[in-house]
Length: 164
Image (cartoon, rainbow, N blue to C red):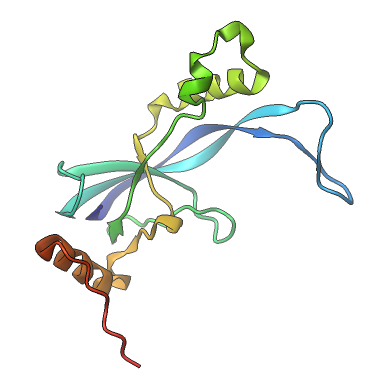
C-alpha cells in the first residue's frame, strides 16, 4: 500500500484459462470438456513511490491491472502524471500447488493449459491491482489517506466522524 505517481504505462499480454460456454436461449456449459487458453491485453504500470505505507520499500513499483473499459473490467484507469493510493495483491499462478504436485501424466487439459499460461505470465509484474481493491486517484481519497496515516502512527483504526 502506497501513494505513487504514474510514470509509465505499457500494454502487455496476459494468458488465462477458461471454460467455453454454449450460448443460446440458455447459458449452459458444454457437455464435452472445452477448456481454452486465451491471451488478453492488460496494463503494466510503473509508479514512482511518493509515500510508502506497507510493502513498497523501493523508489519505483511496477504492477499490472486489466485494461479499463468503463464496464465489466476491474482495471484501474491509470493516467501518466496522476497520483494514486495503491492497494496491491501478489498475483497467484493459475495452476495450484496441489495440481502442480500431481504427476504430469495425470494432468487434465485444464491443468496443462494453466501450466502453459503460468509460463507465459512469468514476464508480468509480481503484483496487481484493480478497482475492487480501492486503488484510486489520491485526490479522491484524501480522508482515507489521513485515516491510514493515523492508523500507522497510533496503531489504532479510527472511524471517520459521521457528519449528518
